[in-house]
Length: 107
Image (tube, rainbow, N blue to C red; front, side):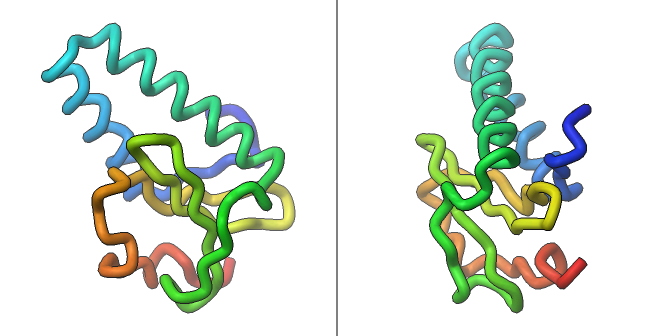
């Protein structure tokens, strides 16, 4: 991504790739491309307005924010100049059960 305000962890990048492959398998590559574009638009919006997500202090050592893009949720941390997207998960997943510690250490 060219926007310096938006950074993806390796796990978030893998999540997006997994989502694309799943949707492409079920609904075709055009549908996967449309979803991918919509997810990236939402991430850019979050990078410009990071306070949109719900603050969660119970998920990691430092606070993260969670923002829905049905049926997915973005887990991200705020930086002075933007956001780091930590994970992109299906909303049915139990976010609280994930180990986000490695992704949410202070920069």
